[in-house]
Structures are given as structure tokens and as C-alpha cells.
Length: 301
Image (cartoon, rainbow, N blue to C red; front, side):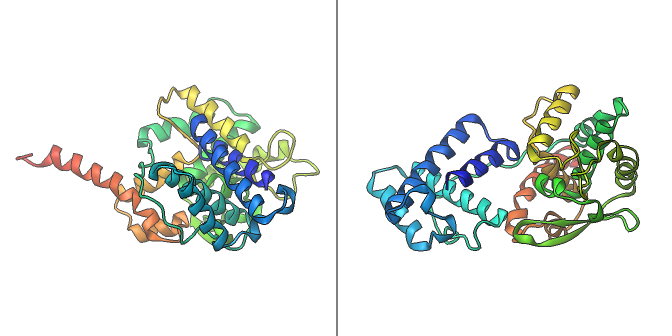
């Protein structure tokens, strides 16, 4: 169980960019959860499998939190940690069913995702253009592709060459739950990705490269953590002061599409959200934009 928790914490650090304090809270909450599950099963952590955890186990855990006298806020956080952990396990294919999916907790506020302006996106994704090396061609292609498709970073680094159809201008993406979707890419992105595949990737290719689209200097598939380090370098290089994580370009993609008039249902399909309610968080951002435009344009505003 500990190995899965470590993988989850790494994911939250690298891909979601959580703060050290948030990470510490996750670690504490999941340590408490695993200890409870171990004591309930009477086995050590090596003898407990996440896939064996059922609804009854989770219900008993929530009751235990109540018996220990935790406040609603603390219990809500611990429940949220458990739900995030199981969501990750389902995403990684380690469990088939999430025993926390019907679990309720005291309602907590949800912060809106940060989005870059169009100008900030342009500065960031063109930063690698200052030089022409195999690494800069790769980095430019990855940044351009993320903003062109709204893919999750995990989905992007998992791409094989065969998943990118430059002729039709689309990318085949394997999302959460193994669900496949085709995402169109605009001509400029096609040109940049093609440039990398022809003139950048061959310099990194080695015997262990297989068909991975994006390679590191050792000739193996680039990891989420590797991309996170690359992104931070360019953020610093162009002097962006906003908190930017690997998810930021995905958020910006969705926000800019909606502000440009795209239908919410279409954006949901592009993002690979199972439920449209997940996509609706972006409508708050576009509503703010509409209000600003209204205030600027209306003669009585």
C-alpha cells in the first residue's frame, strides 16, 4: 500500500503542483487511512491490497474519524484525501472500482483553476524558440501540443508516434479509465510537432526508445516529473509570476475556447471529462470575462 501512496504523492507534486503543506496533509491523511485498513484487516501493509478495500471499509473509516472527534473541516479534508487517492488508483488501473465514489462529506469551497492570458501563453510556448536544439524542438512541440489539445500531461507523455496523425491533424489520446478520444490539432501545431519528429527526436532515439513520441536525453520516454522541470525552467525564463503547474495550459485551453464561443459540451469532449459538471467550473471564468466586457461596453455601466 505504501508504494501506491508514494506514487500518488509524487503525482500530486509533479502534475498537480500542490504546495508542501498540502502534500504533508495528504501524507498524514493517507498514513492514517492505511493504518486503519491494516488494523481492520489484521494484516501488515504488505498484506493489504487497495483493490480489496470495499464500501464497508470506507464507511467504517469515516465513522472512526467521527469517533475521534475531528471537526467537519478536518473530516472533509481526510475524506477528500481518500477520494483523491482512489481516483488516482482507478486512473492508474490499480483498482477497478472506487469505494469512495458514493461517499459524502461536509461541503468545502472549490477554488477556480488559474488560466494564463493569450499573451502569457504565447510567451511561454514560444520560449524554446530562442535556440534550435533537439531539446528545444521537443519542448516547443510539447508546450504547443498541450495548448492545442488540452491534454493532461500524463496523456501527453504517454503518446506514441503512431498516436499523432499529422496527415489528418489529430491526436489519439488515452484518457482516464482507458477511454480513448481523438483531438484535432491546428495547422501551426502540426507544423511544430512535425519539425520535432523529423529533426529533434532522431537525436534522442536509442534502443530503448520504442515508439514513445517524447524522449529524454537518455532515449527513453519523458516522465511527468521531467516535463514539470522543463516547464518550471521556461516559466522562470519568461518571467511569469503566476502559479503555473503542468495543468495550467489545460485550464487555459478550456477557458480560451469557451471565451471564444465554443460549446461547453464540445469542450467536455475535448478534455475527456466523464461528466459535464466537471467542465462547468470553467464557465465561472468565462462569466467573469463577459462581465468585464459588459462593463467596458455598456453606456450605462
